[in-house]
Length: 309
Image (cartoon, rainbow, N blue to C red; front, side):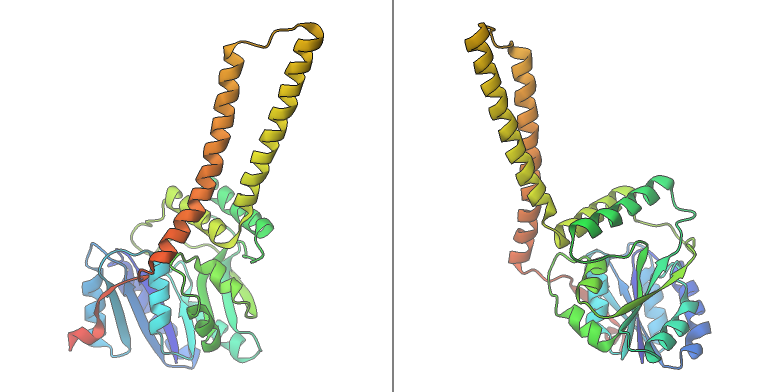
């Protein structure tokens, strides 16, 4: 059986379109399929649509959160509840082509790979500034982290049960799935496809949300920012010592008075800014530690398809 995990947030229009497309290609996979829709605190009629599908089809399941916990929590919940021998994660907006799934199944069954991932071959239709920063993020994270992340990789991937079990062993609260899928180290091959527009609705991923998500990825998989903060502090201290020696020597040898208050204010502001920057970097890591030590659940389920009976 193949478990299909579909995180949803305000996707009442997209769910019927997604389900219809999946039903068209289901027989081509050669396996039975269970759908696991995860309602991540939607404000529209997403839950109602899920209920109707679950009543009509016994192979449709759903989880409904008590509030919005984020896509990472929805992915984790889906993986925990998946029962299939193969598990895939898909976006409901059809930006992840369902027609690739039969080919992904064949690739896993005909070789010794554990995962077939997908990646966008291009970023056509995406705002240029978003494409620019996305490329720079992957370049940066692959330089400062030991965990390799493929540029353009999607969450859409087909995994063996063994790999899913390994991912579920990573119980951290601060989750960055793209990194976790890579970190577990199972053999993965990628399929490329052309970028697609959403089938319905509007994306909730603003530039600011994507930026914060990328910061989380860097903090979760690299300590390079802490090393940079240490280097900046040491370099600033070294430059300050050189500057003080220069001023003292100049005053002793040439009787040249030190500069006035404008230069001092500029130096104070510069050093103060560096200190705040370094404190901010350290604070980001401490904040992650703080959340981890609370041991709060990643998500809370309010309703499932079992509650319909």
